[in-house]
Each structure stands twice: as C-alpha cells, then as structure tokens.
Length: 232
Image 1 (tube, rainbow, N blue to C red):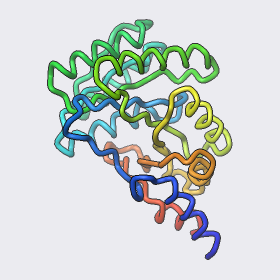
Image 2: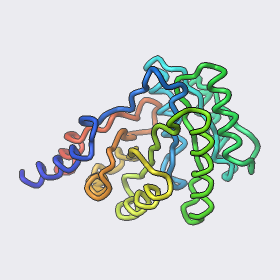
Image 3: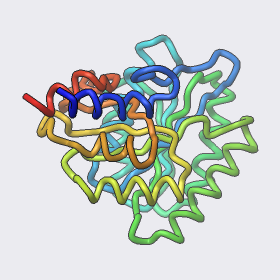
C-alpha cells in the first residue's frame, strides 16, 4: 500500500549508511567507544549485555564501563550480564564520578588492547542540567584518551512508550548528541510506531531492535520486517 511504502521510505532515509547498518568496528580505532544513553527502565542494562555479546561474537575484545554510578542496582545488574557474556567490567563504588570510572576504563581498554568499550550512563532525564554536565564531561574525558571518542552514542528507547519516547529522543539528541537508536521491547508490541516518528522527525538511524529477553535477542533493525509487522 501507499502508506506502507511511505513509512518504509522514511525509515530508509534515516539510514544514511545503507539500510539497517550495524555498528562496524573500524580496525584503526582502539578502543572504539560506544556510549549507551537513555532513561531508566527502558532496558539499557540488558541492551548493553546483549550488545557486548554480539560484538564479542564478531571477534572483538570487549570491555564494559559501569558509569551509571548514581543508581545502586546499575553496576550489579551489569555485573550479571558481564559474567553471563564473559566480558570484563570496570566498576567503582556507588557515587563515584562517572568520568573517573570512564577514565579508568579507557586506560584499562588501552592496556588490554580492547577493540570496543561499551559505556553505561545514568538515565536521570528529570535532572537535565546535571546529566548534561555529566555526559559532556565524560565525552571530554573519552575524547582526550582516544581521538574522536565517543564514536557512537546509542539511545535506548522502549518501543511501547509512544510520544514519550519521541520526547526522550529529542532531549537526549540535545544533551548527548545521539548517533543512533536501539529500540527495545519490540517483541511485546510491533505497533511501536515510535520508530517511524523518530526517523521522520530526528533523522536518526535505528541500529538494533530488542525482540526478547535472551542474550541473542538483539537483532539488526530491519525496516521492511518492522513496517510489515505494523500492518499485520
């Protein structure tokens, strides 16, 4: 149908590097730094675990940085995923300056010869100015240690959130300079028209979709499958 082609066209237009481009880890940047941002409760920790597993499975040495030092359970949850996927985790006690944890992680990644560093961040969007300052400081620290870092900033959005998700994307685009989206909980409701809204308004590519709870349930987002599911 015309509507279907229209929606597909919107999604494809936001995929600048070809359709559903997966994050490609360049050979010449080590570590390649991926910052993961998003409000609490959207599945950020789970996404980091699955992403670590996926990137490791492609033959990369991966390290996770637990820089959400604000939320008590954040590091513990990450530690479970790190153990499950066999990816080392750099963490410090709650309340530590996130930029300090990131600095340690960057140094550790260099010393280990890690290919990819995945960085968890706090999700306190209601406290915008603090979060903004925190993320900017982290970006400066990353950029000083490795040229061009962070190389990718992925925003995790819950497919079920609708307009709220779009507003979060707007805010994080301003605060964190998001380069791509991970859409979680796409299994619960394929009707997450949020993907089209984000692509249309913000022009951000959707890199991955979370389609379940298992470790390999993070897939490269496929616009055609997604648009078809909206109509079935």
